[in-house]
Image (tube, rainbow, N blue to C red):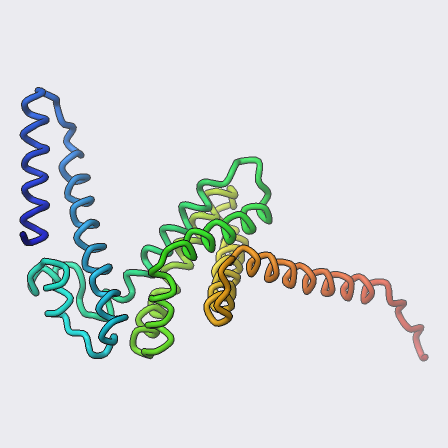
Amino acid sequence: MPLLCYIESVVKKSTGALKAKREIQPAEALPGLQARKQEFVRNTMWDAAIDLFAQNGFDETTVDEIAEAAGVSRRSFFRYFSSKDDLMAQGMVNYGAIVTSAIEACPQTFSRSDILREVVLRVAQQSAAQARTRKIMEIAAKYPAAREAQVARIAEVQEQVAQAFARRCGTAAGDKVTAHILAGLTLSILGVAFRTWFENGQQNISVTVDQILEALSGLLCEDRKRIRRGRRKPTPAAGV
């Protein structure tokens, strides 16, 4: 049964059941349902594509093969993605949403450094627990076109994460620098953590994250000590 037909049948059954119960639906319910349906179809195509990329190769896999594996038509594919590269970049969109959710879930009592550590650790653990993560990294490592498709969305993800930090940390409207620094640090640390975890074949990514954060803390401490020593250095007398 084609995917879109299946979804339509589920939607119709659900709508009929609700009418039978005489429940009044708000005006925004239909758009919300439509959005969930679109997200479901988009993620189904993404999952099917990743399996095909891993099995047959990114360059070798066609749009027709992805559509068939996902149970949709070629025309439906292009309603959601402009190309195979655009589909590959869907992972970055999902990644940005995961990081944003982790930021928003942090307790209000957390400092900015606490939030940074918690978000990095939570996202790393959540991503590493998914079997597809290594598969996606293998595809990106092997095929430059796949890697470039992901890189093309990094700026968009960083802006999304920066906005989440600004909301969470109450950053003043005119002070976007702090939010962007936090976003850049978070994504950079996660990038190093995933790469180290992937290349070394480690199982527990939490250990990797702790090592990276410890190394970063050591570098920052060295810089602070150097700055303090520079401030204490006496100014040479005139003519000396």
